[in-house]
Image 1 (cartoon, rainbow, N blue to C red):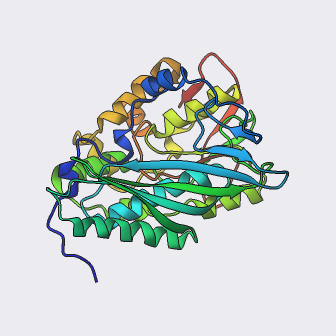
Image 2: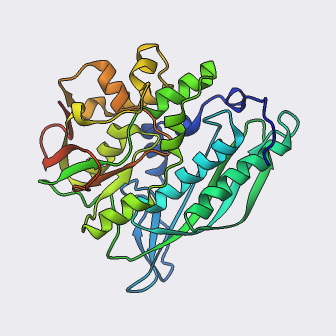
Length: 331
């Protein structure tokens, strides 16, 4: 039984989904000033240095803990689906490191005097259903009264310390595989502006990245990232910069959700997508037009994995080559 919903949740938020992230350049300037934590007796395998998807700490020779947190404003109007999307997005950071989610806690901000709290219950129900599908426990969380609704999860997972997917382990000579289509940012922006519903986009955003990550690990892949708020170009730039290689993207091979190009044509481009392109442009050599670059930089919410290696059933969208003058090349 669901709560009948007439409230448009996206109208209570200034941004939407991962498009409301702090711009990558500004974020790096702040994080770069932070001093590393002192010795804890455990080995920090992945921390702030490469801007990877989650932190990883080795416990012993066979076990590492993967930890992350992710939350955002409503990306769709339906409360239950927003909860599902936000949970899938938070779990994705663990999968993107090659881990298995173990336990999550909810993070909820809610304007109790503006939106019925019954809808918050629908958001939490959506998150719980996705976590159940991932076989991840949900054990409480934290909530505050806030003028703008926000939801997500802090997730803890486990991984083998020698079987991680890292963004600083990419090697030249290998292909790039993308496991979900792009275009979610422009479609979500159109949904917020018009109320139009895009069923395929919701299906893509609620799809778990676990099976793709498991397939990559089985194939011996050791480098990758997920594609979320910084867009394909932003996350790829972080990976090639950390790994000391150059990426060549075949723009014609990149898949898109139905309606994405029309949304771009009609002007529904999130500010986050434009900021992503501005950030990578100084490091980019391109022979495609501005619209194509905007789609490649489009801020995704709960996007797929970008893996260094070929994974059957998913498109190869480029390759890595030895470092050149430009870290990113789009053809």
